[in-house]
Amino acid sequence: MDLGTVIGIVLIFALLGSAMTMGVGIGAYIDVPSALIVIGGSIGALMISFKPSQMKQFTKIFMIAVKPPQTDVPELIKKLVEFATKARKDGILALEGDVNNEENEFLKKGLSMAIDGSEPDTIRDLLEIEMEQTNTRHKVHGNIFNQWGGLAGAMGMVGTLIGLVAMLLNMADPSAIGPSMAVALLTTMYGAIIGNVFGTPIYNILGVRNDEETLVQEMILSGIMSIQSGDAPRVLEAKLLSYLPPANRVSQFD
Image (cartoon, helix red, strand yellow):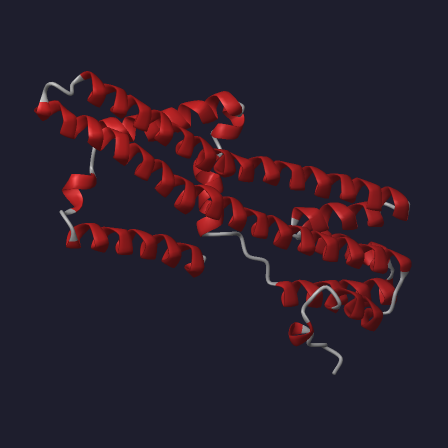
C-alpha cells in the first residue's frame, strides 16, 4: 500500500468529519438529492467522455494509486548485471533459459528479440513503441480522474442552480427554503470534495506512477542494448545506476 495516498485520504475525511461534528453534526451535511446530482451526474458525464472499455478500468486504476505495482530496482539492476556476465562468458544464447522464466514481460520481450538475433535498432524501435503506447494508456487512465474532478465541480454548480431555482419558486413557503438551500450549498461542497480528494490528487499520483514505470522500462531497454552489444558488466551497471539518485547508487563491484 502507498501509505502517503491512504493516509492522505483518511486524514482529509477525518478532519472534515471532525469539523462537521464540532459544528451542527455530520447528519446536516448528508443530502441524497445533492449526492445524486454530483456523483450520478459526474459519472454519467464520464461515461459520455470515455469508452466503456476505459470506464471498466475505473476501480483498477484507483487501486493502482492506492496500491501500486512495485519494482525492486536494485534487484533489477543486479539481474541485468548477471545476465550481462553470463552473456559475455557463454554467449547471449545462454540466456534463453533465464528469459523463459522471466516475469517482467517488457524485459522478456526485449531479451527474446536479442537472443533471436534481431538488429539493435529493431529492438529499440519495438520497445520504444511499446513504451509509448503504455504511456498513452496511462495518460488516458489518469485523465479519467482529472475529468471527474472537473465534472464533479461543474455538477456541483448545476446543483447549486437547481437548489436556488427551487428556493426562489418557494419563497412563500418558508419550510421549503431550507431543503432547497441545502441542495444549493451541499452540491457545491460535494463537487469540491470529489475534485480535490479523488480528482486532481489521484490524477497527479497516477502521473508519478507512470513516470516510475517509464524509468524502469528505460533502464531495461538500456540494459538490453548493453547486453546485446557485449558491454562489460561493470559498464552496464554504471549505465543503469545513472538512472538513480546519487544517494541510491550502490555498486555490486565496490
